[in-house]
Length: 416
Image: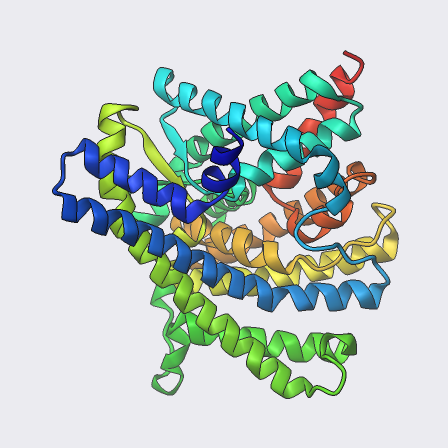
């Protein structure tokens, strides 16, 4: 079981390659097609992951610089090391049993979701278990909490937001399995009521001399260049000693643009291979099931909305962060949520665009940004003894929301 957990479930390229292989075998495809489809799906996930890692690696120094400037202790890596060392086994078991329950829900209920965002199969039990620990739970009750809540998230959140996703993509063959859920639904809800579908982000009139702005990689690179310049002036620690701010920003912009290109190429490879293969599994094992993918899948459909959402979210959330820090609303320092602004709010902007065009994307993302700051502030306070540093960087989304739910249930049943 530990081999499956450590080397397959937590290894998205292998997991999706195996899913593609099984789907193609079930459909009795020729051996050559099975090999090609399986490896291409795995390659797509590797490319997508490499692109995301490049994007995250470009964004992370900005977070670190701002934290350092504010005097906030910087988190070590992607998780709180001491928490993982003590509770990593519980998280792994919660993931394993949660997946079994998730598949049972897909097989025997009308909620036909198969969650395929590999790293989120780990991070949701991680935050839920942390919430349970904060609430005073331990042992078997903690394991049950992590497994049941994780399974509920993997099953129900993609299913609840499915119509928003289908409206934005015009494609009902897949769902989104990513912590953008609550922010995207807020964006979609608001955009539907205040937006105007007749004016799309993708129809923006750009002068011929500025036509390069239509390329998401170029626009993203320019935005990241400017962001590094601004942050570097405010927090000089951003640039390594002896470095040059302008050249540092240029390199960051180039890495960000290249990361977007690699990520989108991976998305195309993955979609082209995994959906046809997945149909074989859905027909035989879970009839009618739909795969839930990582949020970058959305970016290829309305790329202008992604960049608009990122910019709007960064401006809105940074203003809110300054206000809540100045007024000490949460009692702790919040840092600008660069990663959540790009991935989760980028997805929320696409959903908002699908409901209300350009206006919907902008206003929907503004509304989502308010929720983002509220969620990260509340969850950071509640996770004060476990993963507070981690949630300050990666929270403000479904991870914060479900961590808060786990914390509440942990407090309610902690004495059991």
